[in-house]
Figure 1 (spheres, rainbow, N blue to C red):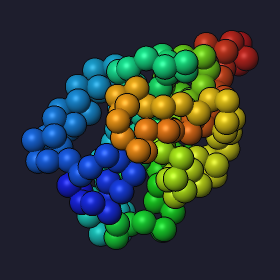
Figure 2 (tube, one colour):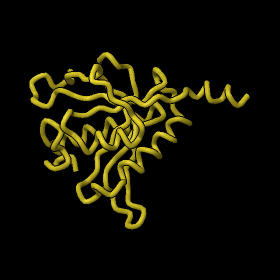
Figure 3 (cartoon, helix red, strand yellow):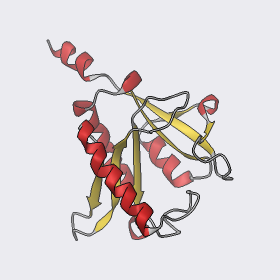
Length: 164
């Protein structure tokens, strides 16, 4: 999947097998924090169709530290609502299980990645052009300009104190 040029259309290039393996190692390692990216399967067929969930950027920007929600799906699963359905489920799980910095979830992508931006908007995330940024790890890439979306969430402590 990570080597498919259609899947990586909004990335500098497809990943090599060793780069994809390194990504998978980071995904597994990220779960030590108690959250991460899940493998996504179709319920009806059981086929692997991608990954979705939470990660923490390892670089600095005006909105870090943060926890990002993201997704990557195989082309045969596009335009069927899987990213949106999975993202709603992830947000629900995250609200119950993650202490989010600044009480928000963020998501970001290149300015031209309209499909991902639509998912962000369906989640109720908001975009302010003042938050847009040049990705610090991609200074020489034409697609370095990114949009940032935010979704306010209550901290687990605030939710539990409301119940008391």
